Image 1 (cartoon, rainbow over the protein chains, first blue to last red):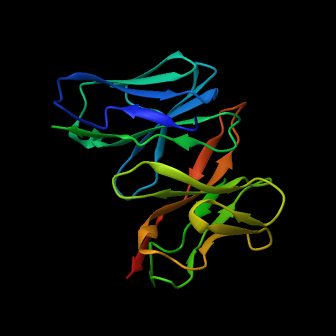
Image 2: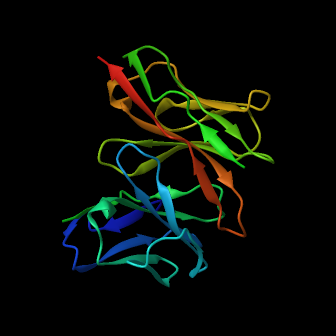
Length: 111
Length: 116
């Protein structure tokens, strides 16, 4: 199974809502990543978890809160987002860092 | 600093013609290089990688890439393009920061349009 799954596929939320994005992989990968991607731009790294511990936080605003409950799951909790946070949010995983497998993404719209 | 450049914002070729998408890189050590493709409204799909070994790397969907150390390039190629190859292509190089936390440095992307 070489698949990274993400739910939901689409999410529309108001600026006062709280929601969560979910990511799952069953490849035994020890590193998991959250990216934000604007249209026609390369993905921007947000967070990296290595062995279930947060190892990189690329100065992401606190309205984004990552969580890694176990080695297969990665969540991104969203609260009080702004319209400019609307984007495609991608999850990826990697075994040894040599390359990353990406999920299909969650298309987020903040109204 | 490590960097990746994709000098063309857009590449247009006719179906059946060869396709080349250019990528050059700058790294301090040996590069790990990757190509990803993104179809409209989809996530990123891994196409191929260069880690070590043969300079010509074969990947998914009939794509290949040639690693050229002297020119610091890793151009993506397909001998005969299909309309379905129309997509956004990203080149990336690996940046090492700690164990198993390897970050990717991304090019800006090249939009490929294959005309019927």
